[in-house]
Image 1 (tube, one colour):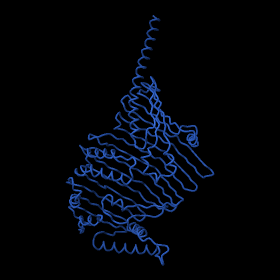
Image 2: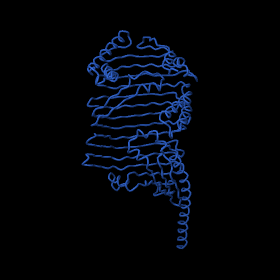
Image 3: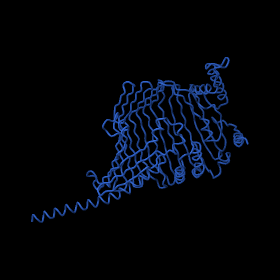
Length: 517
């Protein structure tokens, strides 16, 4: 009896071992197929070139070794604007080894096809440099669990550290990072949960950077049309910046408007100047976008806001923005996305690359316009020291047909829009004064050059005069330090504050703006 029990137990154990071995072999094959897809996705990125790739499959475990180099052709157009440290980094390689433990119970009691841990191969100098921050801890840990369903879960973590250079006056407190990515078998549906508890960086001669509780979550899935829908959320409890150096800036708004509308409006709206040693403190920043599907159309709503923004000890906020984009044709959005992905970016100059994207929008964006899209500013509010800016409005396109963009009069006749605006008078005056300083550039060597005070007084007088004229004509109202107005565009006609405005012929405007032969 005991002998039969013993033989039965041995047979059972051998049977389980055979089944487990067979399961490990099968899951090893499936894991190799899944990891091959993931490698193809990485190899398809334009920023990398695969220098070498090797997969060594065993019965219970396997090893995948990959070495990547940065694509020099991709970065070539941007070499002139990259810092020297970044240029040097682009000449190196990225090498990593995936250690794959096959299922059905890889490394524990939780069933899976495989568990993959990634080891990054670093040079002794790089490892030594990182050890100054992380000590004996691995700088980054990556674990990829491949589920039996074909999807998986990727976890990435970076440990916390405290670092200080007393002589240089540099202190860094990094509170770590965790990221979890869940994905399905064809990677069309995925979720992301990333959290960065905080960072504090003090540089005695440069300034101070700090943020706390940054988190990002998203859940994306394909809709019936194939276009991705879902939600994304970003929040940051606090961001603080302090600069001890001057930072020059120049924003070419006229070029952006010309790019979007083909209308050239001159240089007078281009803010430029220099940010003096300053501080900024942003509190409770939140962003959310939710997209959904209704038959073959995509609707999306975005909300953005913050509790307070303090710049040089002047407080702004709270601020809130609520936008909606509705009735976007899903199949056309997919075609536009595919057109973007087909654009060749390697070795293409930025200007030519930008033109390729514009051509793709013109070529594939037509059907989106043909399906009556709508944009609405449901709510915008920003509290300023001098008052509050509020805006509401919407834009809709109805009855658009292919080729209407070639005739601005036809296109504008199918466009309807309305808006209501309230802005503090002092805020608008400040913008006019700033632009006047940019417009009237003073040559320091000129005889009796005007002072900034003279320029400011001239701008204020011109602004006050123009506001009074518009008020008398009924185009705006002045109430308690606020300037209020409304605008409507319908059937090719513009009204401001319910008063009609005579506009020049659009064809004449385009003809005047066109380059002369």
